[in-house]
Image (cartoon, rainbow, N blue to C red; front, top):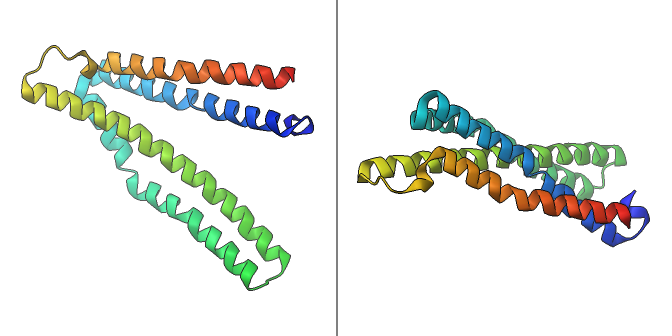
Length: 164
């Protein structure tokens, strides 16, 4: 519906939806940090990071699927195969883009958890007691707070797009 008015409304809607899509993953990461911290402290957070990293092989394999499907589509086009083949490779390429986006979410989530675990290990080994950024509750609050401008900006953009 946004495309019926002008190209600008499509851009605004795309930006808004893209920015609002950060809410779900951030809430899941925050819940994971707080839940693992409540159950087993810093060890629980480290185990959740290892659990996410244990899927790395599958994540990398699904990430590689997109370029392969894209190359197959290019070959089909250059070989001037029938349109049915190109439609099939386009559908596979779209699936590849989706799996690549999912893989990036896993990478970001595991990076956050691993960073928090490494920071906690450094604090413990160095004997530092006054750094609050290593506290899982503080990090969870920081992530949640950093997500809020994206949420409010997205809601504002989507409201402007609806009013246009």
